[in-house]
Image (cartoon, rainbow, N blue to C red):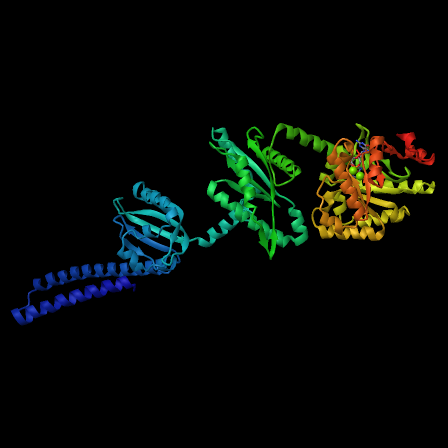
Length: 626
Ligand code: C2E
Ligand code: MG
Ligand code: MG
């Protein structure tokens, strides 16, 4: 027997029993006579009453059962569920509200529309629109927003909501389920972060930059303002990385990014890390915007030294600027041209700002063409050396020859070194070319030596070549291969070599001197001459630059400079060599001042080895070649 049937049965039995008791009392104790109709009517009445009471009992039992089932589901679900009447009062709030919001169920029951108080201020608009939609059109919705929990935490919620209607279709309230999606959102944000931001500096990364540029170009097409792309590269950052390690370099980059971010926040500039030590800044060119001024503000941010692991670092940067649309209509072109302008800024002495221009474009294209040709020239070895004698000014005899490089290009004929050495230095090709020069010069020394012509060989060395860690090893090998005594070799370095890590330079120079190689400072007086360094460095001779010799007869100042350099050399036990002697009068004057050696067209132009060989073999006479 089911529970409902049992309830029915007991209810009818109870009703009939009650009615029968009344009947018995009435007939036996009051009327003392038995009437049949008085039995049938109460009996029927009892049955009907029994049936009614039974039905009500069954319905109540079923409702209680349903409530129990509903509670079993809703109360124990992890989702926070509620039913809110149109008036705003909560009819049902599941206990999970506590875990999600920190508030007890009672708080919801006491305060109509309590959910409104929990919404994060940034999501208020979204919530307002949602509420309106639900109450108006009645379309079910799922939205995601943030709430502030009772203890002030931010939680992300997925909120599923739909209206509830009565049997006539009238809306009586809304039911809603709220799920905690904070963890999923955190993952999503992390994924979005690594897709858009640079992990080291937390600045927008290159990918975001490209998207931002695409968007700006699109907007500019709709009549919005133009913009500037600034390519900022830190000067000599590679040196910091190489010397102090990448960990220090990384901390420094983070500190730099932190300073750059200050301007990003204030001026709504887009500041991104392009890669390595390169940053790209995009600025909208509204009324009054001045990209050069903006770029200089970024460089100014670098002015104060940085401190990493108790080391102070002075950092400078070079900036190239390209403007949309005149300097490029695609992100790639704008970046390429801003980069080209940045290279020009570096060449102009670093810590500098340059705007892209058509001339620059031409110069860049010439540069790349020359680089390409130079690479081929190295492969095919299109280089030759000419040799210019240096004479003892007193005796007039040749004591040394300087090897001077020429590029014998099949396309363009003989090209002088100043036209291609800067490109070779910038592209690093100077290392390979420099090695070729040493190889050829040492080989030529061997040829002359075998012919009984004894001369010192002077070779020019570029600062880039000198800084190479392999420089000394390479030189030792070459000297060994050609059986050339190191004392027969002189290297000419410019004052530019002395810049940078002076201890490293000093060690290298000392090592060369120990080997027996002599060292001359070329073009002395035109660069960065520190008397302090001069005192420490193991220098054998100072080559007085031709610019002081040119007008030595007419300019008192030049004469004074040459005399001072000669005195300096003499006191420091260094030889002085006058360069660019073109006239006999200059020769005589320099000899009179006391310069030891001289070199110049008056003595001999630089010549190919064969031409100089016959001159040297015939006995060198100044008059014969002048
Ligand atoms: P430098 O080492 O100072 O060489 C002297 C330059 O002056 C040479 O120019 C030479 O031809 C020129 N010269 C010599 N006497 C006179 C004169 O009386 N009057 C005038 N007006 N000029 C004279 P060049 O050969 O064109 O070389 C230019 C520069 O290129 C050199 O200056 C040197 O700095 C560089 N260079 C030459 N060969 C090499 C090389 O093999 N490696 C490197 N790294 N640089 C080199
Ligand atoms: Mg030289
Ligand atoms: Mg020189």
